[in-house]
Length: 483
Image 1 (spheres, rainbow, N blue to C red):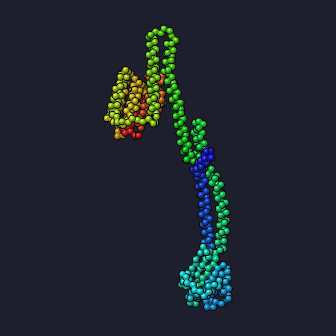
Image 2 (cartoon, rainbow, N blue to C red):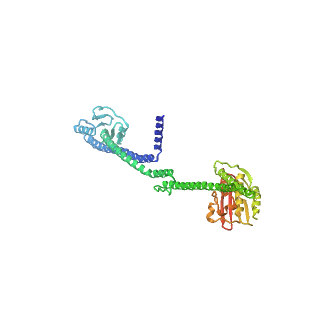
């Protein structure tokens, strides 16, 4: 079992190596270095071969033309026993390690420096072209020889008296190419080793910033960094770290929010319990408690129990809305009728402080919403407008819609919200006027619940307020639910 696990780990490590950026940089640099050098080597060898063959062909051709003139002037086409000419032919053959054939006008070989084909007839395309006055050359790189045909022209008549067919060996060229190839291979291997070292160094250097990025991210395991991390080596690493810093900042905010939420929940839940504890202890420690006092204390305890229950209920509502897996019960709802029902329930509460609630509907609105959650959100907005209002004040609820969204505005003539406090009003347990929070009541979770319900409908909510004049909450929600 251990051996199998070890083999699997080794296989995984090999796959990781092939997928690593360092390995890919290394391969790219190696290819960039080796491929051009290999192509250059091959081009040099081919160019050298072409050049060497061309030079050899030109030299032999010149020699053959000079010798062809001697053949005509010496009458060799008639008498092949001229020793000087035969000596020159043998010398040319030996010099270039080749073979010379002299062909007369009847396509018969009258001289062969190899002395094996004399008196034989030769008819080929090159020979015929030569009798027509055209010289030709052919390089056979497989059998390693150059063959050329040169017309022998009579100077007095300008007629082709014969053809000189010459073939010369290219073994010396091949040997030179082989020597050059070995030297080039040694040089190429040396360059490959040098490129290997450079590729290894450069690839390691190129991925160093990414290693620092990994190290910085791994540092989060030890706790959040206090300062933003900056790795400006590349635009890419800078972008990655900017995104990481934003994520880190968001995580810090969420962590602080979580800690603050836990502290607030603890405080809010302990406060009613502490009050009930004090009231109960007072009853326990006193003997023969009057019925009126006993009743008064029990009423206070009941109120604290109601307050505790309200906090727990709101917390449960908030938790349900926070769950991303929680699904909305979407149905087609008449928003006008929904608001009428909400305002009908809240008007008696507003009437206690002589606050007038006015509903203005620009047009009928039908939307796809979760009626329960949205009713809770709208109730919180209107109830807050009543709670934080003045005596003899007013609350105005206005409903409008376009082809995509419906808009709800809840305005009041209340105490208003200071500008520096407006961005915090949707936070859990946040209260603008903490000194009067017990008198006003509530749990400080209403607007957080409202915001979550609206966001679940893919909507938006914003607040505008002037301290001492009043507040307006504006809600915008799609008419058709977007899943």
